[in-house]
Image (cartoon, rainbow, N blue to C red):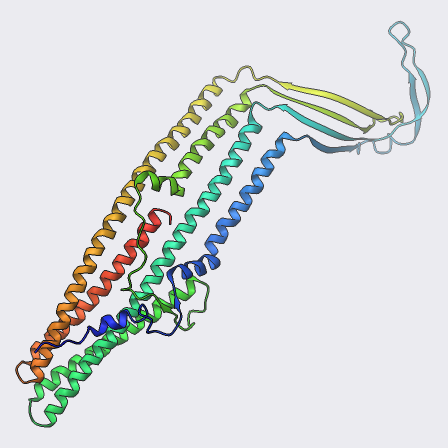
Length: 443
């Protein structure tokens, strides 16, 4: 006789999806948002971006004039006494024709000092300022892209933890259902044994299987608790926070958007980093070569200072305007070697871009293959589970009618629990394949 009852385990797995579970369901996207809000790693990445923005502003300051206050003071300790007090002061040292010197009383001082305010402006630094600004701009872009990569990794980690917890819940439900199946059969056999209808061997065999189902439940419950502790910790909750209802591992979720390689490359932060690194290498080359170009700056200064030695002359304000020019002439071929060195760095970044493209292409192909094959695995596992359920129902019915053996029942029970576990594992593999694909396309 073939039973018509539905597959119990599938009913339990899809209960939340059918609205049977009254507890509010925590969706995958909601959990992602919780993890993103809490993630310390993402916060570090954001801080790096803030620092890079400040660095870009610092680099721009190189275009602006600078104001410096300079001061210097000296004291002669050896002639500390001799250089203090009244003495002759030079009034007129004469000329070449009349070398006579006229002296007037004066005061010698054993100290000198200068105090100046200098306003300087770089007119041309060989391209260093422009190159430094391009480097700072590249560093900011790299920080932003690194933050984007961190976000992709966190999203993938959140998805993995979410579906692992959902699978653990599904396996716990399966263990509970399996224990109930064994318990019902045990009660039937025990009743028949008490009535003297069967031997003790059958009772011992089903009792052993009942204990095995209890051990299986304990292991499933342990895995379930650990999985939900990980779920809570990742989003900043206490590990022992009561578990929330999740999307069942067997539920049909939103589909994936299939993209070709060029579309994926436009979305991938690590590929964009390759272009930024190339631009940064070119800017670094300009910065390195700038010291071999002419340099020019202008300055305006003004301040007070004493003569050396300080013999009492009047201290007055002295304004100065100047222009600094430096033209490198000969450096023993250093410029050529530096240029070769910088070109090699740029070539490395070009090759890295090609390498990244190949890796992303392989990653995309692998992710798509896993999604496609895991979908086939799910269909095969569901079919196997249907057969195992039907087989268990028929053999159990036959045994209860006195037409089968306990060995057949035990074998059908093992097949059922294996098929059930394989089905949940296939669902989990499919969800993880989808999560990997989403990470690949930076979704």
